[in-house]
Length: 48
Image 1 (cartoon, rainbow, N blue to C red):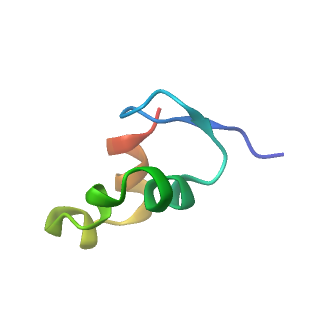
Image 2 (image 1 turned 60 degrees about the vertical axis):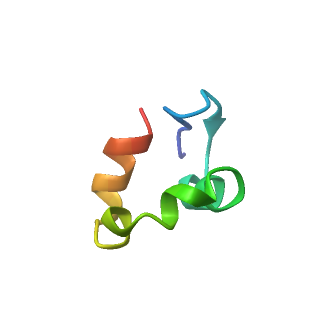
């Protein structure tokens, strides 16, 4: 079904990218540049 993405910040393999950013890297979501990005751009920037 769905694959896992590897976080570029901590190296963990995660299935739910937004939940991972909210729980582990909350400072990234508070960044003004991220608020205006689309999900595909967030995935490119923080996940492999």
